[in-house]
Image 1 (cartoon, helix red, strand yellow):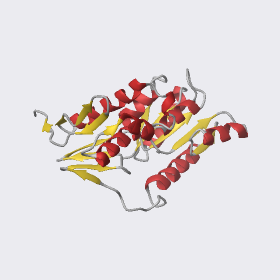
Image 2 (image 1 turned 180 degrees about the vertical axis):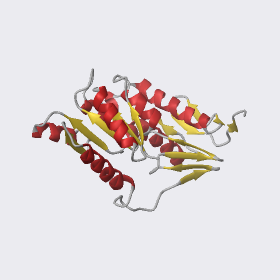
Image 3 (image 1 turned 180 degrees about the horizontal axis):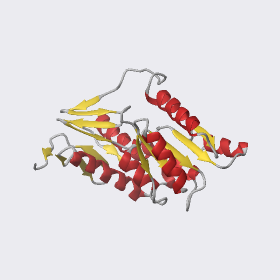
Image 4 (image 1 turned 45 degrees about the horizontal axis):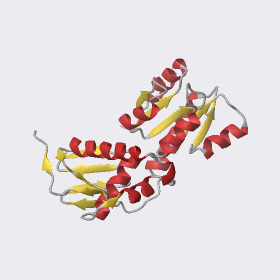
Amino acid sequence: MQKIMIVEDDPKIAEHLQSYIGKYGYDVVLVHDFQQVMEAFRKHMPALVLLDINLPSFDGYYWCRQIRQESICPVIFISARVGGMDQVMALENGGDDFITKPFQIEVVMAKIRSQLRRAYGEYATKMEERVIEKEGLKFFPERLELVYDTKNTTLSKKEADIIELLMERYPRVAGREDLLEKLWDEQAYVDENTLNVNVTRVRKKFQDLGIQGAIETVRGAGYRLHISWEKADA
């Protein structure tokens, strides 16, 4: 069942969308804390996001940029703004489509289906799926999925980038500078602790698979994938 996340601060509109979209067999998630949008995104890893522009604290453009740092899932803006520049801004900030309020719910549904087909279905670009495998650990870059033994876990885009570089460099060290360059275009604007936070998240993903000690810290150099891992206690 594909999951759709709705980021809309008008509860009546959000609940109306949730009820209608849910009738078509989708798992619909509403965001209620508009300062924790990315936390909700990472938790649910939706196939598509419906995103309002006018939101508390940060607008939809901001949240779309944050999503684009981690995922290429379709983002459809829904807004009462009708100006042409607003639609341009939505697309320039990473959106895939734009729906103006008031909207016909059937149009919303049609656009959702269209974007899902384009991203994952019959209109998606067909290519041979890549898989990187080391000692029984399988990484699927296009799926953002990590598999070990009978378990699997879904990754954010940045988590996947870290794992891909670690597996490609194995048994060599993946330098901190190399990781920063892969994860962010401008290294100078990234707090050093940001990389540490993302590596910690990747370690947690390995633990979810029952693997302990998968990432070795090489002091003064970077990180190395530690293949001779031990399974966590059952």
